[in-house]
Image 1 (cartoon, rainbow, N blue to C red):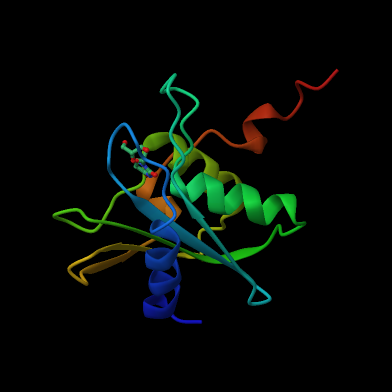
Image 2 (cartoon, rainbow, N blue to C red):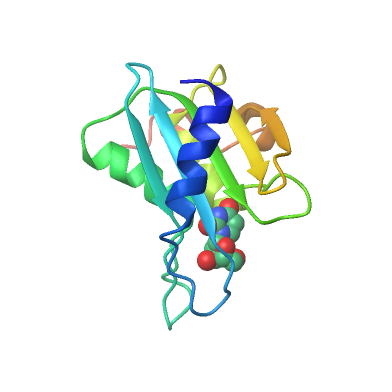
Length: 135
Ligand code: THU
């Protein structure tokens, strides 16, 4: 599945967004190296902070189904520029996505920016930073 198709999956997933507070719908889709696709939308909460972004919904769905190896991620929203992932999502993407994975940022106008998690979150805290600390 190529970028435009993954973004289309994300666009469809966006329609299920639960956004009574921000009214800002986001959709995401992730593809594993063996070609499986998992989608997600943002899910808000009256207490605000439990809100889950679309990217994390898609990644957590995939990981909870046993997926570990990712090749691509797409995120889309009705933004002026292709939708940038928030900082928390960048950290979660960096946990699972290698530097070679493609990240497609899109908007409803059809604009696409192709990037990588290394570019979006240089110097991320990672499992290597925890080495030697386990009891
Ligand atoms: N949101 C996402 O789903 N992904 C992002 O990376 C940016 C923000 C959601 C969270 C909240 O429901 C709404 O957009 C406004 O911040």
